[in-house]
Image (cartoon, rainbow, N blue to C red; front, side, top):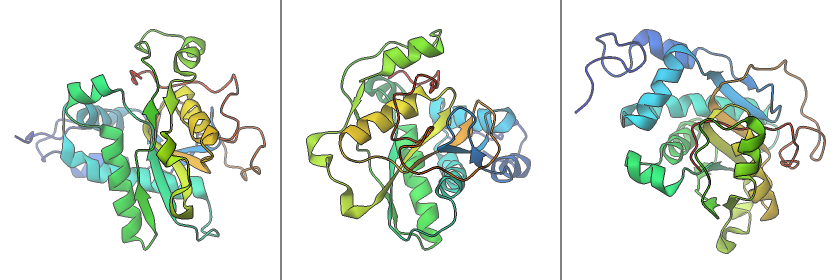
Length: 242
């Protein structure tokens, strides 16, 4: 059964009203203050926050398409000018198995697939693949400080041995629904880099931290890049249980 009211504002215009669609699609993607190598499509406020929660927690699966389109815009923003013709691989930050069972779906994997489809419609060679797995249980992030979240997540993700190869020579882009302080993205980048698959960028639908002023991305290995995932100033999102 689909809700008769907009998941973003409650108006009687179906699951996504025109005003909330514009709020989601009209924001300008940009780098996140805490993680200059990660770009978000919109701030985590108002209708965008409610739409993400409806998709993730209430199974509003029809929202995957417009949310995926927003994620695709963040991917394009993170990659910058289309100078590199290499095909892309979108790798979602995984949800804990218990969370997937409780929700009945993996929201970030679904959004990664929707973003890949949106980018393919633009003529890009893109696919999504869930390369990351949880290597150990982690504590519930709710109530943890940023430092505790980093410690909680450090070493929690891994890439299975069969995936220790850049598939088809694709450029890896980490994707997630939300970034808060960045520890989840940093841990995912660490696990991929350890497996020989360092991500070139990261993209999320929303950010609970401000966008920062745009500046040219530094070369791999420069401060703030995802091949330095262990930096102590890279924090995390509160709603990821694992």
